[in-house]
Length: 495
Image (cartoon, rainbow, N blue to C red; front, side, top):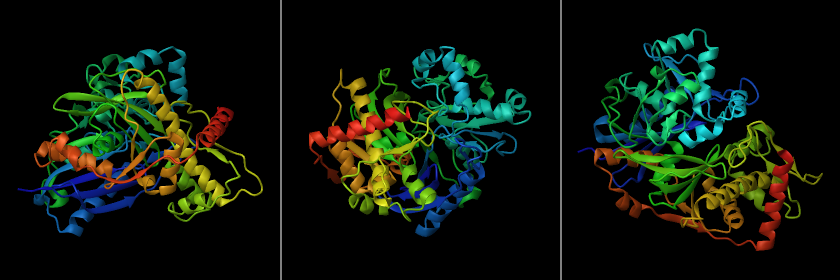
């Protein structure tokens, strides 16, 4: 019986394939970066063929590296960058436009017009989301309106829409299945959280034909098999989840009150709120955490649009570092008397502000400010934004429920000890880093393995989670208060 589990982690800047054993320990990893395209300020695109080709390359690479055949793999799971929108031709499988990435702000005017009509309250009640260019619905409409003949073709059923999971599933299965899971569907602004289905009135509002849409399935279940020609044999596809929900599963946040933050290009804090959705008073999102056996579990989510992207800017934009790993040493050596605040609103600010129209700023610089202080300010900005989200979540949830005070972290920036210590100091709460930091891929692998019968139930899986290090607060209350006030003053100036 095959026992290995393969996970595809298709992210915003790279694609990874990770092979796990039956204990969900990592056997091998392959990764490949791909280009980002910025046609105009605030616009972000990917070539869908880059997403597909990098996926093929890393899966084939990890199988070859380990001498693993398709017949050795019990199941494949997919985790994907969410909200990123692709429309393709059903007959050829070819995209009709570049993918519009979740960070893209080109539809801000459309969202503002809908808000002006007073529609956000009704939309939020149905979807748990806000009227923001972040989500897929207005991106789909933009493609249909800007690609010649696209709207007519969509209405005739000739085109398919999908987030990246759906596009990869279509290609992996040789065009046999057009489907997604509930976590990804819940990020489109078209999904009704109460019914668990796409909502006809929302489709009418955004002028989108139902013929475009994928089938919605459990996060752990049947998604067909890969085309045998791709990997030397068919592999069962048995799990799909948006990357942040997959990371929450990988961090075994199965109990209400547990929360995690994933630090990648952006950062996302998810709080498990159980099987009863609540509406946020602090402009957080209510979303599907996972759906297993037809049962939906919900989460509150706060999105930070720029986290690791701030470090990437230091490297690629300013050229003051050569590698992200340098930032911890630089930050530790920065002048403690310089209080520099960097508000990294490259594409606006996410929760709890939701201001796509503003741009970033650095305040407090002097002639003595240099690379060390910029590095520290970039890392601190991630912690400050996390603090904003944490406070909002506690307001929404803790009034009636007990929230765990420990934050579980993962993602690329979770390797930065300096940042995690500052995060614990600013939150005034412990921060736990797991032994397995590939939690996004781990969550996708677990969902696939669960459906295939080779992964244990949630309780047993939870027992496998191990902490690598805990960061505990060491900052005094006066310093914490002063630093947070400085951050909020800097944000207020940008706003």
